[in-house]
Amino acid sequence: MSLLKRLARSLAPDVWIESVCELTPQYLGSLGIKGLIVDLDNTLCEWQSEDIPQEVRLWLKQLQEARVGVCIASNTHNRRRLDRVAKDLGVAYVQGVPKPRRLCFSRAFELLDLPPESVAVAGDQMFTDVLGGKRSGIHTVMVKPIHRREFIGTRISRMVERYLISLFEKHGLWPRKMS
Image 1 (cartoon, rainbow, N blue to C red):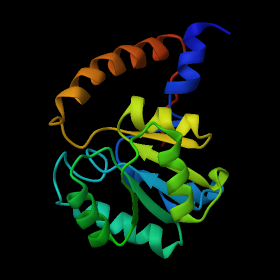
Image 2 (image 1 turned 180 degrees about the horizontal axis):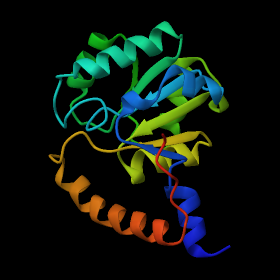
Image 3 (image 1 turned 30 degrees about the vertical axis):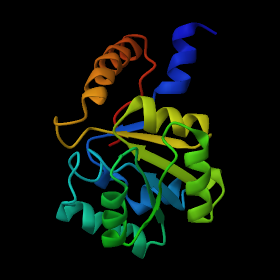
Image 4 (image 1 turned 120 degrees about the horizontal axis):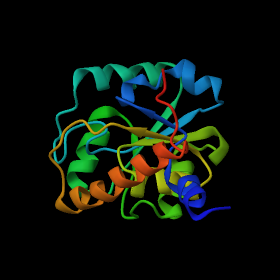
Protein backbone atom coordinates (compact mmCIF):
# COMPACT_ATOMS: atom_id res chain seq x y z
CA MET A 1 0.00 0.00 0.00
CA SER A 2 1.32 3.43 -0.88
CA LEU A 3 2.36 5.94 1.76
CA LEU A 4 -0.43 8.29 0.67
CA LYS A 5 -3.08 5.59 1.14
CA ARG A 6 -1.69 4.71 4.56
CA LEU A 7 -1.80 8.39 5.53
CA ALA A 8 -5.38 8.66 4.32
CA ARG A 9 -6.39 5.57 6.33
CA SER A 10 -5.11 7.31 9.48
CA LEU A 11 -6.07 10.91 8.80
CA ALA A 12 -9.06 11.11 6.45
CA PRO A 13 -12.39 10.99 8.31
CA ASP A 14 -15.14 8.57 7.40
CA VAL A 15 -17.43 11.58 6.80
CA TRP A 16 -17.08 15.35 6.79
CA ILE A 17 -19.80 17.87 7.52
CA GLU A 18 -20.34 21.60 7.87
CA SER A 19 -21.79 21.51 11.39
CA VAL A 20 -21.94 18.99 14.20
CA CYS A 21 -25.70 19.57 14.18
CA GLU A 22 -25.89 17.57 10.92
CA LEU A 23 -25.25 14.38 12.93
CA THR A 24 -28.85 13.36 13.48
CA PRO A 25 -29.93 10.58 15.81
CA GLN A 26 -31.28 8.81 12.71
CA TYR A 27 -27.91 8.94 10.92
CA LEU A 28 -26.04 7.75 14.01
CA GLY A 29 -28.62 5.02 14.63
CA SER A 30 -28.25 3.78 11.04
CA LEU A 31 -24.59 3.09 11.86
CA GLY A 32 -25.35 1.47 15.20
CA ILE A 33 -23.86 4.47 17.02
CA LYS A 34 -25.18 4.91 20.58
CA GLY A 35 -22.53 7.33 21.84
CA LEU A 36 -20.70 10.34 20.49
CA ILE A 37 -17.37 11.75 21.57
CA VAL A 38 -17.34 15.40 20.58
CA ASP A 39 -14.67 18.08 20.60
CA LEU A 40 -15.34 21.40 22.32
CA ASP A 41 -13.40 24.26 20.70
CA ASN A 42 -14.54 25.14 17.19
CA THR A 43 -16.88 22.14 17.17
CA LEU A 44 -19.45 22.92 19.87
CA CYS A 45 -18.44 26.55 20.43
CA GLU A 46 -15.85 29.10 19.42
CA TRP A 47 -12.31 28.68 20.77
CA GLN A 48 -12.04 29.56 24.49
CA SER A 49 -15.76 30.36 24.68
CA GLU A 50 -18.41 29.03 27.03
CA ASP A 51 -21.21 30.38 24.84
CA ILE A 52 -22.84 27.34 23.26
CA PRO A 53 -25.00 28.34 20.26
CA GLN A 54 -28.72 27.63 20.60
CA GLU A 55 -28.73 25.28 17.59
CA VAL A 56 -26.01 23.17 19.27
CA ARG A 57 -28.03 23.08 22.50
CA LEU A 58 -31.11 21.93 20.57
CA TRP A 59 -29.04 19.29 18.74
CA LEU A 60 -27.67 17.95 22.02
CA LYS A 61 -31.20 17.79 23.41
CA GLN A 62 -32.28 15.73 20.37
CA LEU A 63 -29.39 13.32 20.93
CA GLN A 64 -30.22 12.99 24.61
CA GLU A 65 -33.91 12.38 23.85
CA ALA A 66 -32.84 9.66 21.38
CA ARG A 67 -30.65 8.16 24.13
CA VAL A 68 -27.40 8.87 22.29
CA GLY A 69 -24.73 9.39 24.93
CA VAL A 70 -22.43 12.39 24.55
CA CYS A 71 -18.96 12.87 26.00
CA ILE A 72 -16.76 15.92 25.40
CA ALA A 73 -13.08 15.21 24.77
CA SER A 74 -11.11 18.43 24.57
CA ASN A 75 -7.45 19.36 24.59
CA THR A 76 -8.24 22.65 26.30
CA HIS A 77 -5.86 23.67 29.07
CA ASN A 78 -8.71 25.38 30.91
CA ARG A 79 -10.16 22.46 32.86
CA ARG A 80 -12.54 24.64 34.85
CA ARG A 81 -14.07 25.94 31.63
CA LEU A 82 -14.47 22.38 30.36
CA ASP A 83 -16.14 21.36 33.62
CA ARG A 84 -18.53 24.34 33.51
CA VAL A 85 -19.53 23.73 29.87
CA ALA A 86 -20.05 19.98 30.36
CA LYS A 87 -22.16 20.54 33.48
CA ASP A 88 -24.18 23.25 31.73
CA LEU A 89 -24.88 20.87 28.83
CA GLY A 90 -25.47 17.85 31.07
CA VAL A 91 -22.83 15.70 29.37
CA ALA A 92 -19.78 13.73 30.47
CA TYR A 93 -16.25 14.82 29.67
CA VAL A 94 -12.71 13.46 29.59
CA GLN A 95 -9.94 15.54 31.08
CA GLY A 96 -6.23 15.18 31.56
CA VAL A 97 -5.46 12.91 28.59
CA PRO A 98 -4.91 14.70 25.29
CA LYS A 99 -6.19 13.56 21.92
CA PRO A 100 -5.10 11.69 19.82
CA ARG A 101 -4.00 9.32 22.62
CA ARG A 102 -6.11 6.17 22.74
CA LEU A 103 -6.42 6.51 26.52
CA CYS A 104 -8.54 9.62 26.01
CA PHE A 105 -10.94 7.63 23.86
CA SER A 106 -10.90 4.62 26.21
CA ARG A 107 -11.94 6.86 29.08
CA ALA A 108 -14.77 8.26 26.96
CA PHE A 109 -15.96 4.70 26.18
CA GLU A 110 -16.00 4.02 29.93
CA LEU A 111 -17.92 7.21 30.70
CA LEU A 112 -20.43 6.40 27.96
CA ASP A 113 -20.54 2.77 29.13
CA LEU A 114 -20.34 1.65 25.50
CA PRO A 115 -17.99 -0.51 23.43
CA PRO A 116 -15.91 1.27 20.75
CA GLU A 117 -17.99 -0.18 17.89
CA SER A 118 -21.03 1.75 19.22
CA VAL A 119 -19.24 5.11 19.42
CA ALA A 120 -18.26 7.81 16.93
CA VAL A 121 -16.13 10.94 17.28
CA ALA A 122 -16.84 14.38 15.81
CA GLY A 123 -14.34 17.22 15.78
CA ASP A 124 -12.72 19.90 13.67
CA GLN A 125 -9.12 18.68 13.62
CA MET A 126 -7.48 15.95 11.60
CA PHE A 127 -4.46 15.45 13.88
CA THR A 128 -6.42 15.17 17.13
CA ASP A 129 -10.04 14.15 16.61
CA VAL A 130 -9.79 12.09 13.43
CA LEU A 131 -6.40 10.51 14.16
CA GLY A 132 -7.46 9.61 17.70
CA GLY A 133 -10.72 8.13 16.46
CA LYS A 134 -8.97 6.12 13.76
CA ARG A 135 -6.39 4.85 16.28
CA SER A 136 -9.28 3.78 18.51
CA GLY A 137 -11.12 2.04 15.67
CA ILE A 138 -14.26 4.19 15.72
CA HIS A 139 -16.34 6.06 13.14
CA THR A 140 -14.83 9.51 12.52
CA VAL A 141 -16.57 12.72 11.52
CA MET A 142 -14.68 15.89 10.69
CA VAL A 143 -16.56 19.15 11.18
CA LYS A 144 -15.84 22.49 9.57
CA PRO A 145 -14.48 24.78 12.34
CA ILE A 146 -17.09 27.18 13.73
CA HIS A 147 -14.71 30.15 13.60
CA ARG A 148 -11.28 31.07 12.23
CA ARG A 149 -9.98 32.22 15.62
CA GLU A 150 -7.94 29.47 17.27
CA PHE A 151 -4.79 28.51 19.14
CA ILE A 152 -1.54 29.35 17.29
CA GLY A 153 -0.47 25.69 17.24
CA THR A 154 -3.78 24.76 15.63
CA ARG A 155 -3.28 27.42 12.97
CA ILE A 156 0.05 25.86 12.10
CA SER A 157 -1.37 22.34 11.91
CA ARG A 158 -4.21 23.67 9.71
CA MET A 159 -1.64 24.46 7.00
CA VAL A 160 -0.54 20.82 6.91
CA GLU A 161 -4.17 19.72 7.17
CA ARG A 162 -5.19 21.82 4.14
CA TYR A 163 -2.29 20.42 2.12
CA LEU A 164 -3.20 16.82 3.00
CA ILE A 165 -6.90 17.36 2.29
CA SER A 166 -6.10 18.71 -1.17
CA LEU A 167 -3.73 15.79 -1.80
CA PHE A 168 -6.30 13.25 -0.60
CA GLU A 169 -8.99 14.89 -2.76
CA LYS A 170 -6.73 14.85 -5.82
CA HIS A 171 -6.21 11.10 -5.40
CA GLY A 172 -9.81 10.23 -4.51
CA LEU A 173 -8.96 9.45 -0.88
CA TRP A 174 -11.10 12.15 0.80
CA PRO A 175 -14.70 11.25 1.66
CA ARG A 176 -17.66 13.01 0.15
CA LYS A 177 -19.50 15.52 2.25
CA MET A 178 -22.37 13.94 4.16
CA SER A 179 -25.67 14.98 2.59
